[in-house]
Image (cartoon, rainbow, N blue to C red; front, side, top):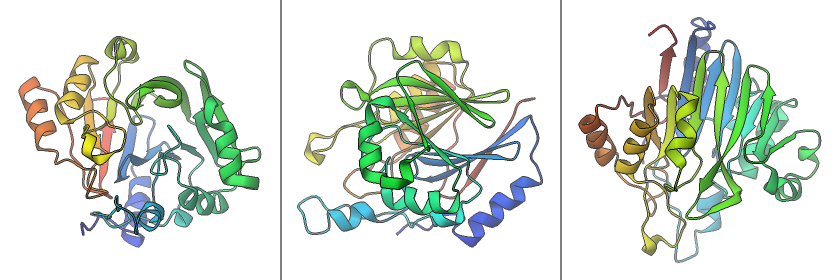
Length: 279
């Protein structure tokens, strides 16, 4: 089992330490495992697609497709009461986890949930009363602002383009973050993203393998190539080292980035990355 660089009290201590460095020209991001990230900008906090439970491990324990966890949980979602907004890029449990969202919403009663418009009925059914006055649905190309963060919904192809899947470009001050959600490459993808001048791309690298019997994603080389094609200032890989049956080492990603001259950062779970707008 992989131990996060910072975990629970240690993770919260690192977040608290970052507070002393907050400014309108700095952005901080922590990888929470799988496709989950905590983003901090100028005192405001955002969670991107958090999966902070063992819901899938329990669900599939007695099946032919066990979800054996590789990395320990970074932080209890009930400890994240400072979060003002959360995203869910699609319905799969590692991107829409009721066991993460309900304790998070109890700790952060005003937090909003940004999600594809096509998934509103699903979210209302799964979250029950916790969904009331909390959902911010976005169709493709629509925008919404919560505090310091502005979200624009972009298409994603979790094997196929569909309104239930999306990625988000998040604007925070001078920064633009692209969180792709789960996706493979599709025609026009890079051209659609290039005008955003993305500072930080967060892209899956677990690839596609029919034997897994789950929808696939970019592989490491594709993620590096996409980041390079859109002119991303930095790219961080994700969606690996969570479940033994659905992962890939970051070596191909790292090698391809080096070959392309694409700046990248490979984080440990619980590790912080800092971006400075003046550099």
